[in-house]
Length: 119
Image (cartoon, rainbow, N blue to C red):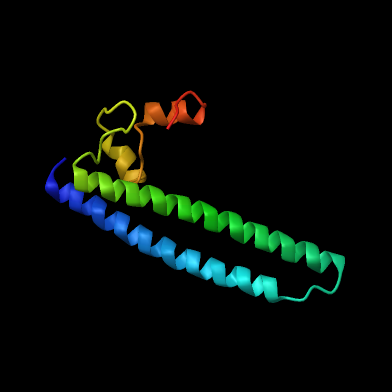
């Protein structure tokens, strides 16, 4: 992969990571606020519980993507970015354009989603 394209992906990854860090911080604050709300009836308690679960799930998903982004940045450092971590084949440029933190090529990603791939 040429240096200019690699720098473009690196910039996108860093920007996305910073966005997610801000979102996670905001979500944690919203979760603490939801904890502090006093629910007067069963419906309010159910709504409050749902909101907390939703915020927790969103935060977990965002943290997972941040982990994938950090792994991609680490692969950039060691020179393996753009290579599938499973088959070690070259990743499709369209895949990296869509998901710059992708670990797998499209074929291996499909296998992973079907449970046929470990790791």
